[in-house]
Image (tube, rainbow, N blue to C red; front, side):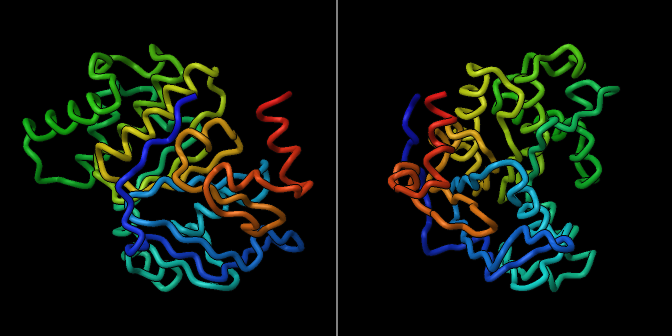
Length: 258
């Protein structure tokens, strides 16, 4: 497994600041007074078991959920104080890569990529649209698939096209939700490499939600481990697992030993 390359990160520029955020659903306390920062140009992995609140965090950051307490600031705006119109504008600056790639099965790859572009940038010429589509497909290494249907693609290819469709609006921030889920080990390595390539080529700041330690080690400039509703450990990958914490060791053993 290749080591994470050094990224151009501006530690003086915080693009996401989660400050004292709590979120419960009835008696289920998912997040408990959590703090977290994402720096400009950084890949931050949020690591944790299924059901620990990782996806809830993404929904809070994007304004799909409101925190019970605390504030979330994204690109200079306090999310929980924005109007719906302001939230829609902010979300255009955040790219979401979903587990299932979220492609339209009835559209070709080209049409899937054109859809968000034409919907949100109505003044583009046909030549400009073609150039944007071809550029992002080249960026994910799948220009040759431009006229194919999603059903003709492998799982890894669909994942790449989903990332390309997210990139076509040139977001400042990328959110990857379990990017390697359901993929074979070799394809997982390909997707992890792509996440690093996107960071370098498009100068994105990213949060990668995963329970896959191989992914975390390969793409994370920092890792934040979510345990019992709190970010108990934040730092470099090796620092996270340099501990006798009995909640952490079995997680490492399962991913790398079993």
